Image 1 (cartoon, rainbow, N blue to C red):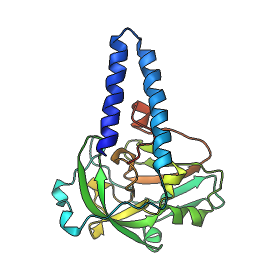
Image 2: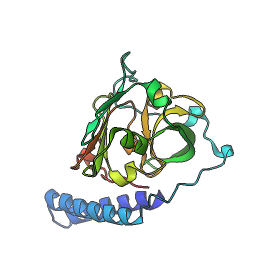
Image 3: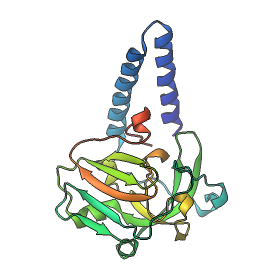
Image 4: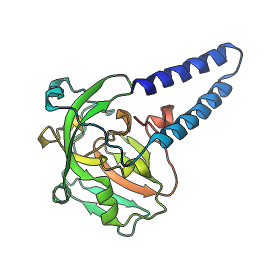
Length: 230
């Protein structure tokens, strides 16, 4: 995490220096864009679906009141009474899953350290269903190279590469610390994985789409790294 934050600050500093040296904002933007692509190539080379994030001991669990929560709506989002997860895109069997249906699928649990781009980290236990189990059930096409996650939190969304999406520790979580997810942490369902930074973890999940082409994200469209790997 420290490596990624330091690298981002370095890139921003270099861009600022470029601007001070007389280059226009377009040149600085092109510089950052190019370095972002380089950063993604490096992260993809380091990524392995067989490399699992270590699980900290239970003694390192962050007290729940101290685990930061975040949403972009003016007030805390609550799921509509008819909430269900819609799964679409380049798949053989488009589907809609209720929370009860998701809970009946094979469950995965893990204790993982969460990393935020702002520099803090926290540990919690999560349980839910692996995204690759959902991909199997709906018959995701080999043409699906990206997965787009949409939220009912004021249009929040993010898009991931398929490799990170299919990592065995990437789950759609409906539980935190041994109980159902609370609204402040993304109830009824949120995306979670130790292979990405916090802003990639879409809360209040409502839609998952397997796509052949890449799209952006709420923060990514504002300049954050698209890949966002840890």
